[in-house]
Image (cartoon, rainbow, N blue to C red; front, side, top):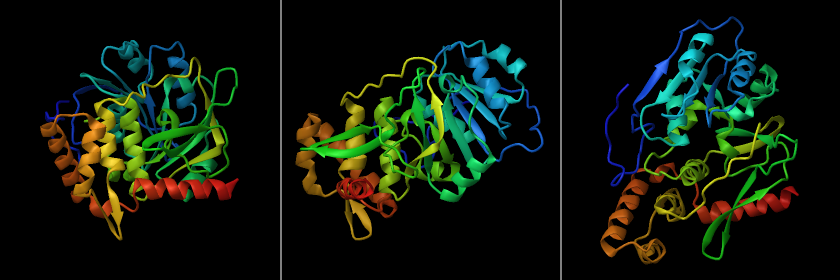
Length: 331
């Protein structure tokens, strides 16, 4: 499948999957079994894990409406052989350089159900505690994403409560172990969670112009909160990593600048958001770009914010302030 080539240097995507990635689909087109769950599963493949067949078996045992397995080009899992063994699974292999966010966009594009469970292959090495009663409860919550508890392979609790904060002038995310049903979290760790597909598409999905996987993920979920959606935690389902907990690169590279422009600079005014022209000097100092480049990026961000001004329901400063008061009252 071949898509359009879009320059990532001078745009911010405004619609879902504006970039069409080239990818190959391997699928036996096996019909869905009767009484299947009314939910699909997107399996994000991280590496050539020894548990990949086990992961597929565990997912197939839950009788999802669809299972879409997506992977990066060059990460050989003997996928052709697996597609013959599991004709009910749709295997998608990206044919160009992509991030996990790009893979998630592809998976969401292929999904035909209203809801989807997103999970990595190394979180499915044990049977899943996921059933129709849980699905019905999650659907009734009407949230953008509901994230699970996560554990190491030795059953140690991992932090899944992500809290946005401002340390001086610096945006940071605090990681917490505390969890209760319905507790808000800035983002789901590792993208793992139960998603409303239409909400994902309405938000625009993952921004392909942000090439850092960490800041791309943060951009999506910060945007979700700023645009009035919610991500919450549930203690009713959980996953354990089969191996080491994956490390993330949190460097403030050019991807952070794009995150900053889209999520931290807009200011909410009564019923819409704007980036005040007076904030340029702060941005220029923060970015360390040349004057010409800083002006170009700032204008781009102001244009994008203007196009989406009515989507905003708050701004970063108010979100963090409210988050702090909610956490204090909830403890």
